[in-house]
Length: 297
Image: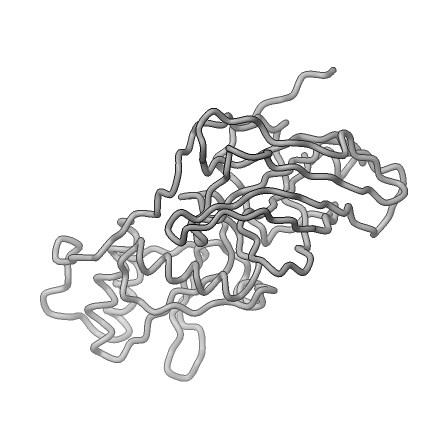
C-alpha cells in the first residue's frame, strides 16, 4: 500500500504538468493474495481493475493487457516493471522493479521540480478492504511436495461464470522424470462474491486421462465442513505419470454449489477444463501454501 501511496503523490504533482500515468493490468504474479485468482476472460480482468480501484484508492488510470499477455511479453515479463516514455514514444527510463523515489527523481530531471511536493500524509485515499462473504480458515490447506509449477488450463465453454476457478500445478520433478504430483485447487473467485454451500453435497471432480498418462486417483470429493458456508479452497494432490509423450490434455469435469448472499441465489454448477501438463509462466507463483516433502508411501 505504501508503494501505491508514493506513486499517487507523484501522480498528483506531475499529471497537472502533462505527464500521463497508467497502471498496466497484466496477470496476477502471486495469485491468492487477498483471495484473488487469475481471470479467465477479459471481462473478469476489467472487474479486477474495478476491485483494484476500490481497494487501493488510487486515481491513476488503468490499461488492461490482452488475455494472451502480449504487452507483458513485449515489455520483458517483469512482474512490477516501470517505464518512462518520452513525448516521441521512446522509452527514456526502464526498470525491472518500480521504485517511486527514483521515478520522482527522473521526473524532476526530465520535467522539472515542483514546489511543495505532495507527501503521503497529504493523501486521503478512499480505501476499501476486499469483501468478506463467508468464513475462511476452516478447511486446512494441503502441503504441496516442494516447488510447484503452474500448468496451462483451458476452461471449456460454460453458460455460467467460473465462480470457482481451477488452478493446476505439478512438482518440478515431473518435467524431468515424467512422474510426480499434480495439485488441483478450486478457488472461489472474490469478484463474484460467492461462497461454497456446505449444506449440500460437496464439490466433486473427475479426470479422464489420454493414452500414455495415468492419474491416481482419477476422481475426488471435497471435505464435509462443519460451518454452513466458507470460501476456503478445495484442494487435492494426485499422482501423475507420463509413460509416453503426448500433446493431449487431461479432461476434468467438476460439480459444485455456488451461493451469492447479496443477490440471494444458490445454484448447482457443472463445468469442464482441459489440463495441459506444460509449464505456464504467465500464471504466476503461489506464495501462500506451505512447502513440505510428502513422505513415500
